[in-house]
Structure formats: C-alpha cells, structure tokens
Amino acid sequence: MVNAREYLEGSDDLQKLQEMVNLMCYISMDLKEITCLESLAVFDRKLNAIFCESKEDLKNDKTGRSKVEEFIRLHPELSIAMKDVLKSGKHKKIHLSKDESLLALPVMGHKKPIGVVGIVYASDGCLHEECTADLLFKDVLEIFMTRYQEMRDKQTMAAMSCRLKTLEDYEKYAILETGKRCNWNISNMAKELEIGRNTLYQKLKKMGIN
View 1 (cartoon, rainbow, N blue to C red):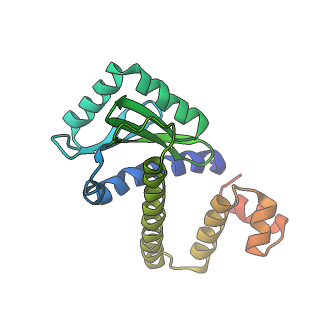
View 2: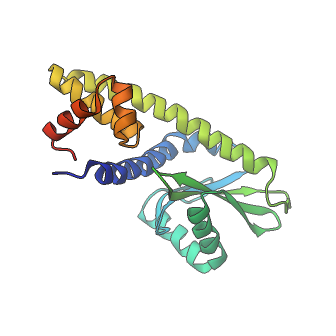
View 3: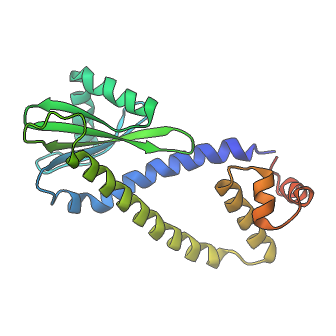
C-alpha cells in the first residue's frame, strides 16, 4: 500500500514550490514596476535557482539562472544567510552595498521551508536589520500567493467537477482533501467528515491508504 501521508507531504511541498515559480512568472512584470525593486529569484533547498528576473538583462532561462547561482557562489555570505532562512523559517536581509540589499524570504512547505525567494532592491543606505520595505515586500508576496492559490483552487475545483462521475469519486476526493487539511489525523478527519473512526479506517483501507 501507499504511505499516503509521507507521499502527499512530499508532493504538496513540490507543488508549493512550483506554485511559487508559477506565481513569480505571473506577477514578475507587475513587481518590476516597483521603483526600488531590481531583481528577484526563487531557489530550492539546495539553493539551485529555479526562477529569476530583473529589470536589466536577467531572464528566466538556463543562462539567467546560471548567472544567479554563480553570483551566490561568489558571495558566500548570501549562501550562509539563505541557509539560515531555510533553517529558521524567518526572513533575513543582507546588505550587498550601501545602496542595495537582498531580502531572503522562506517558501514554507508542509512542515518546514522548502525554498527561498530572493529580492534585490535599492535600499537608500538603510542599514536596519528590518525596515518598512522588507515588511512591505513580505506582505505583498503573501497577498499575491494567497490570491493566486484562491484562483488555482477555483480552477482545480472546476476541473475536478468535470472528472468526478460517481458518488465513490466524490467520496474519495473528499477524504483525500480532508486528509491534507487535517494532516492525516484520523480523529480530526472523522469529525470533519462526520463519520466514525472505524468507518474512516475501512474507507481508507478500501482506497489502499494506510
């Protein structure tokens, strides 16, 4: 049988990281209209660049991502800071120069950070560890991510409604979605689905999930 909890956690994390990349592709043109923003990138847990854009010549292609990775390698303090973000789950600002800063934001997965968003912006010499610009960028990305997720959920539900043909299909979909929301806690799932624990165990067993 499939160990659904382990599998879906990994699948959800991968989907979350892909959604962040999709979001960046979707909003990068709008973000680049922000006067002080110079460039942005998304990294996975190994600090491989999986997305990048800038106001100048940096494009989201193999060459552009290689340039970003080379920049990180040449500046070990950035790598150290991003690893700290991945470990702590908290954003961190790195001063690149007296006029330029990099804000590293965690991409949160199911239980821990699964990637980092890096935003390079003109800082006007601000040396504070946390300033209004940092919090603004953080909030803007969170708002965009929430709106994007809502849009994706609506699209998913619309697509699913076309594929769900029988009552059994709807039941399986409801159990899987409830499992993800409840972190596969059987008691919480049973309560939300309004069925007994034994009944839920039987349905999960029938679906091949332990």
